[in-house]
Length: 73
Image 1: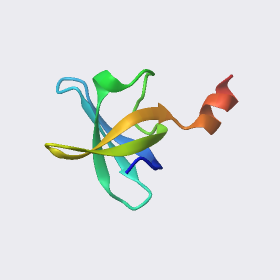
Image 2: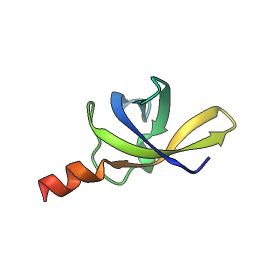
Image 3: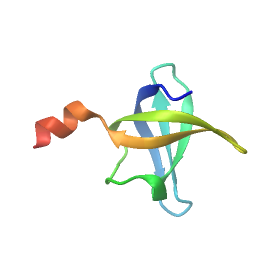
Image 4: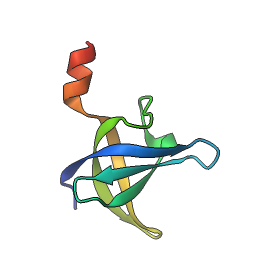
């Protein structure tokens, strides 16, 4: 389950410390804001891995889409 996926961030909940990504298959996948290294906002294009936690599937290693990072440099 370590293949990277692409998606768009659809929700950021700073109070609860999580966000939601919708992937190319239309699946909503949560991620923890504390585990992100960059400032990810709603509508950010991201890549991520899927991990199985005791609470179900979650996005891990969430990073901004590399193409967008290169354009901003």
